[in-house]
Image (cartoon, rainbow, N blue to C red; front, side):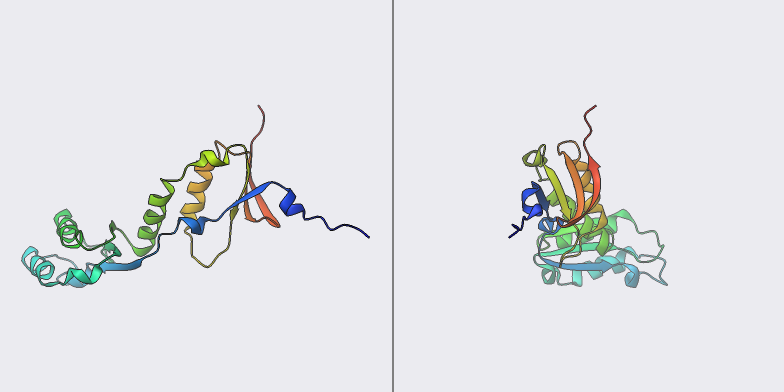
Length: 169
């Protein structure tokens, strides 16, 4: 009888799941477009009234992205006023769209990642999961790992795409 050999477990591959860098929490977006006069102009007096009259506690422990969905030029002080209002409540405040915020939240976690534990190892960066991982996270993981690992692959240990292999120069 032939012995079944699990080549994946014997390969020495270590899997990194980018979803492990996900930070749980509510997300919200504040779009400044509805606050503009004729979708063009932000009036300071009206904006200050909006900031003063809004219950910012509804953003307690929430990651908040602030942006304007049209091409209006928003004065920097408007973002600053919103930051002052949100800061006591929000888990994080970001300039940009929901997608840009998600990238920044992942990047904050990636900045704490120490690739040294993977020195001279063969790595598979997992490709599928229940949590959407922005492409930028895969790029950043590759950038961080490349100087220390033997190889980087993408996918699942049983079906990988080679991305990088250290050469002995």
